[in-house]
Image (cartoon, rainbow, N blue to C red; front, side):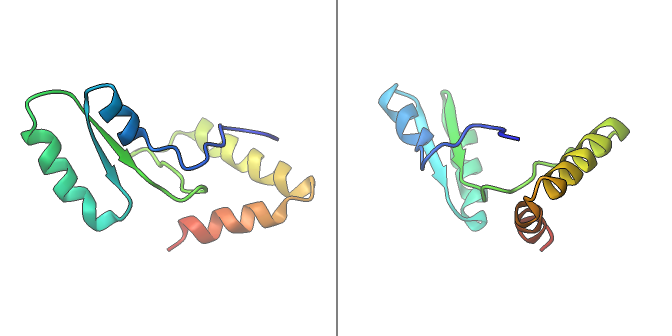
Length: 96
């Protein structure tokens, strides 16, 4: 089940700078508060490029039943198609 787009170390902050927009790259969680302060203090548009783990899940504040069902189906299909290691990697990345 291919999904998403595999981007190889794209630096969106650098692309923003090339377009004349302030671009900030955050590679560690500790850097985020300072980057946000700098972005809000800047008088123009800003792009913040936050690097995350490949399997990091973006979880909404409230998970709807349809979302939980879809995720469960994805995990079952992955296991049944022999990609159990993918599910384990997903769990290791997100259960910290």
